[in-house]
Image (cartoon, rainbow, N blue to C red; front, top):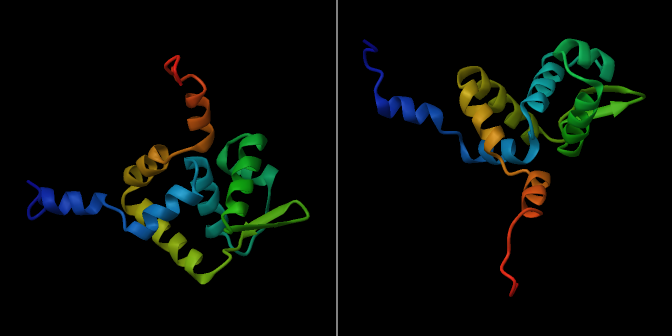
Length: 137
């Protein structure tokens, strides 16, 4: 038996703080971006080239480059001369990254589901292109 672990305790653990939820939805567009952020954050003293990140994460250069751009746009990563490092634009962003890392360590499925369920503008635009409308519209 699970002892004092109830459904209520379980469901509370699956819910993310509203600020963290908003941050994940706006700044982290894929699990690859999350993994890259955590890699850079875990080795703050090191600046990574795209090729190094590709080897570390076993990804493609195109994918890593896109993730770097997303993280740069979110104010989480700084790049100079082809090298990128964790550099949050504010202490508030750094705190949100602390919370994200802790939540991912404790509830990885919840974080992944949040990322996957986040609206993606390009996907919505693609889907909208195939919407059927009435002739009157």
